[in-house]
Image (tube, rainbow, N blue to C red; front, top):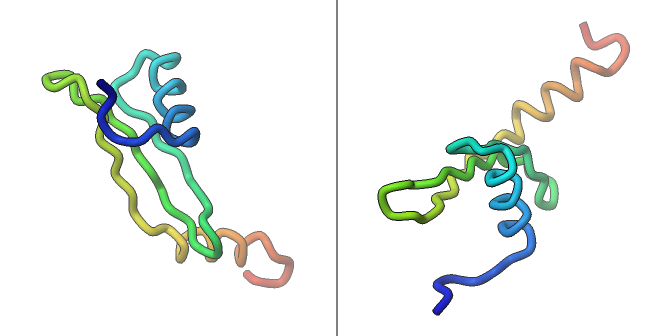
Length: 72
């Protein structure tokens, strides 16, 4: 029996984590006009994955502004 839903994005995220052989992986994801830093972590005691997200839209907008000529 499989718990939860299988979304291709999450499956790719999990496969990346397995290939790296580490306990967590972080990626920046754009959804619409917003950016999120998402971290997928393996919880070894329960053999499950947890995903954490935080909104980094302000940071991404600031990075773009710094790259534009004449901003500094």
